[in-house]
Length: 255
Length: 255
Ligand SMILES: Nc1ncnc2c1ncn2[C@@H]1O[C@H](COP(=O)(O)OP(=O)(O)OP(=O)(O)O)[C@@H](O)[C@H]1O
Ligand SMILES: [Mg+2]
Image (tube, rainbow over all chains, first blue to last red; front, side, top):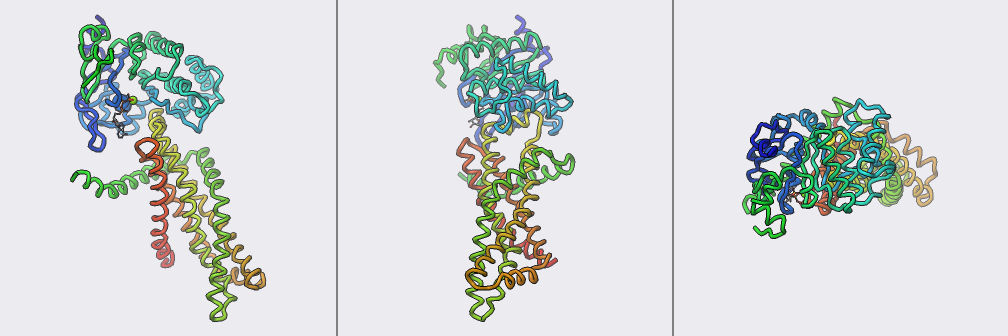
């Protein structure tokens, strides 16, 4: 299978984790995490609540720094980066935060325009076009003038996604993109993720508890628990052959 | 046990170090790129708006009570005529800037700490970094600069209002003529007194807002963390103002 071949290592992986460990004030969240994510692949990171999936995404963006091991993004070791290098790397990655993390003091329009303005070099007309296109991409046309506190949780999520896609990233990190969305919107997001990969060759890393949606879009699953990778492989393969994954998916997880 | 004890003991030192690092970042940022005009003006308006009423009320009553008290004391050796001198000196050199700063700790400092802390716990600060911007530049520098500018302005206002408050009592309660009172003020207070007051106010503005920003940005642990940050900003802020007031006054008298 294609995925199998990719895993051998000749896939030019934009993200590589090597023996990454992470702890917060003595609380060990990750012990030894190693994996790589290949170009234009859709990978879902699974794991029970609180295993540090969000932390993994933040590590990929250089928002947090590991206490051990090494992370490589686009061939650059994050540990040797200055804040400026990190900004260059981050500008190629879009991230949808778990709680959307929209700026409350800015309108939806300004929220989506934010990364464009930060990067500079866009005319107001171009910005307006990007905002409009991205809002219709997430099926929320015409809400430019609203403020985040006026939006529902699911709408915030989708605006957050529109913002993450504003600067045409090469990698998009989704932290629970479909939690709190109605089935139609879930379907919309799933299709959008597939479209990103198909049309734009974007690498997607998802964290989700929505197994069904993840089965639909992912090429590969990584199951994380207790600070280690328990399983890593093509979705169908894991579902058939991996007992951890089978237990997790069927809700018979006990540690 | 021992580790946590050690951590608790080292925490204040660690925080002071990190606070220093934050200030260094702010200094670099302002030196290198100036300040974002929009946000700077927004913060000036913000801080000014929030403080106006409170500065007015605090200082008019302080001026009034100061006149009452000094007259009560001065009367014992028949020196009631000097009420104006003492009120004016106390207000311009000391009470105007200090009371304004202490009150603004509660009004502005707590607001800033709460705002930044909730941005931290809702991942908005992470989002700023993820979108290629710098939280110091976006959030901290404009606020600190605005405070350095606004506090002296508020302190000028405080001087006028405090002296006017003292005048009300002097004229209506102590039966001095307006002429005597205001003459004693104008002839006694020097430009240097006013200048020292303004220097203090600027410095307190810097102290209170930088402490509030630090408290907000280092918040952790959900909504509870927002409460902690707010308390910390007010308590640490006002104590630091009172302590630094002594040393700053000493310094200003010396030079
Ligand atoms: N900034 C931080 N400071 C201290 N501890 C943190 C921080 N971020 C995360 N943690 C801790 O790391 C652990 C993992 O958190 P994380 O948010 O990554 O979990 P998660 O797998 O995303 O869970 P969920 O599925 O519920 O979102 C938690 O125990 C949390 O308390
Ligand atoms: Mg999470």
